[in-house]
Image 1 (cartoon, rainbow, N blue to C red):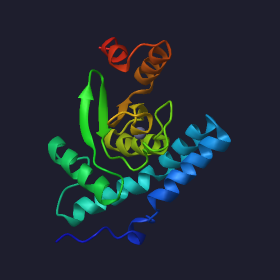
Image 2: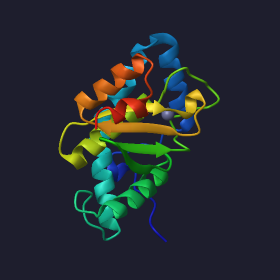
Image 3: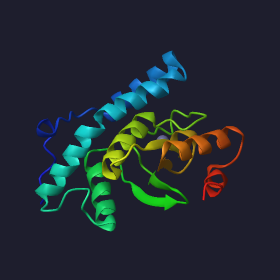
Image 4: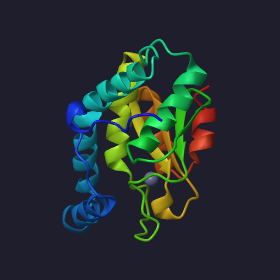
Length: 185
Ligand SMILES: [Zn+2]
């Protein structure tokens, strides 16, 4: 049997999901739209430690570093790691010029506290730093579907800043993200 992840050795603390969701709801309640940037900043700040924890977690299983793992192995190990650390399962994919991260059980999402917009901003920050390290270049992350707004999954798009800005602007004009991405081909 695999050892559970050693939280203190990885600079991690166990926070209950109830606390995370309460913090998020309180920020949205009191800060309005500004809550998004605050949550994203907090997530981004922790991406490095989480990436290091993933690197050690792989090493403890006799596997190579995240940068050198074959893509399929990386995808299955990353979902195992995020599930084991309580965040949920992830499914990695690609759509036109961006990468996608999908999850049907993501811990930051909260279908019982409905939002009119995707709400996993802490996660968007984490993923930007985590996958930016893997890609060795800055990545922008935007959530385009969210369980908090009634979707069956959360979907994050990962790409360069310019592409993501074009998708964001197109969506503001009522274009779907799929159509906006198709136009970036
Ligand atoms: Zn979400």
